[in-house]
Length: 270
Image (cartoon, rainbow, N blue to C red; front, side, top):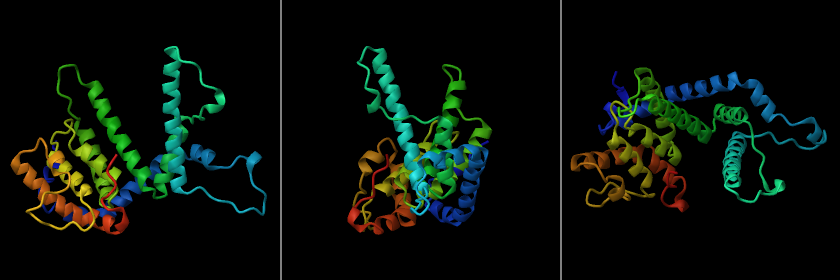
């Protein structure tokens, strides 16, 4: 079964109906995040709760963890785990052991997942983007691993439908001008594992994210990053990407750029 999303990517009017679906997709995203949080409610409560031994005095002000705090804590825990794994590999190769006090404290994966899902359910866009990109990567990696050597990996119909839902949710975040969501969206829609990958749509989003505040539609002027981002596309595809990039820029990125005039160009996707 062909995905309905990539098939219409090259059309200039694509962003108009995406905007009309924003509220509906928002409800789906929150419901998806709440479902994951409900399955791990006990773990989430254990993570957020303050141990009795370190509770502040009764009259002292209590600062509740925000969704941003939860996401930052989860990212720090993931970075810690990565550093510990790297250090373990170095020691296995004969490096000197690092003093214990210099090491960070790792967190069990299920607690990190609970933090991320709680933050996403509370509306943290970065956490929502991370979980969506993580799920997309899991689906694609599983497909690649299950494909016999020498054969072209392709997503199964059920996985295609799930990826279409992920793309719609990433579009919602990207329409708010979030650079990481734009890059995650571009990576997914251009994946060769899809039955109908859309490099034009991916390039258009990346082009839109590169344009600085105050950019105007000028056919005689090249878009910022055009030479790099349109490399590999045909002349016709490049023209389609340029046109669609302006549509996308007007729908999301011009507003994001205008909200931060001192920042200049939008932060580049990671």
